[in-house]
Length: 331
Image 1 (tube, rainbow, N blue to C red):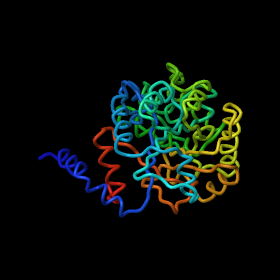
Image 2 (image 1 turned 60 degrees about the horizontal axis):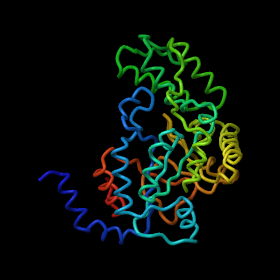
Image 3 (image 1 turned 135 degrees about the vertical axis):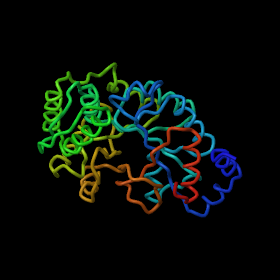
Image 4 (image 1 turned 180 degrees about the vertical axis):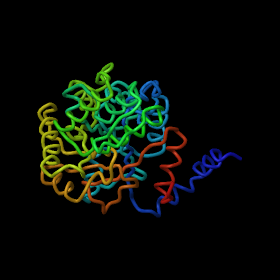
């Protein structure tokens, strides 16, 4: 008997649902980025963060049928002790602000009655350029150069795709610590070193503000994913404050409503949040902030550093992982 069949039989038996009742109330926040009809076509920019449209639709069908989708506001009120939640509640979130969130993900969510949370990297929407990890990945994977020297003057081979990915990861360690103009300057220097033209918004990789507003009209929530996607735990307090505050102000200006939900970028380095950033986010006026740390959110957890779960790339895998997670099993 195959492992997949065994897992299906275990789920269908209801044993994991019974076990979940003994674990106490918890909420699963799923972390998505992109949905694409052909994810392989985006390997040079987005890498593995895109889910196929077919798989995403199947996963949302499972969530609507076997779990209970809720809003991020429902979760906040639960954490404040002001709202009870149904069993096995799930929040669906998206980071970055890719146009496919509007064109592909949102219609699927609406089909199944699932409210989404879309965290927008504000400068990327303003400039219509992807976040810096996609820009750097494109630079290294498409360059014809055979080598690159990092800012510490260590040489990196670019002879194979694997070499290029290692060099990209090294460059990301430097870029993740930068925000604003220094980040843009670093990226421009990389493109110059690698002798290629900068990545373009091809075609319409990022959402427009009209599309972001369309998500609100469809009943979804829009939050901040910073201005320029730095690792917030590795920039100075002044830069962190600017990323929190300017992105909030710009969203409120564009959307005409308070922006009170935040998502921490998780590029290259760990940790990607600290107690100081939690303090800053509270001071600036955010109600919730999500991280890339794994696990369920429990009633006693801090709303400004919430855990999330990375979904699998298969429908059955997500179904199994969610059922096990709610039952208290580590997967």
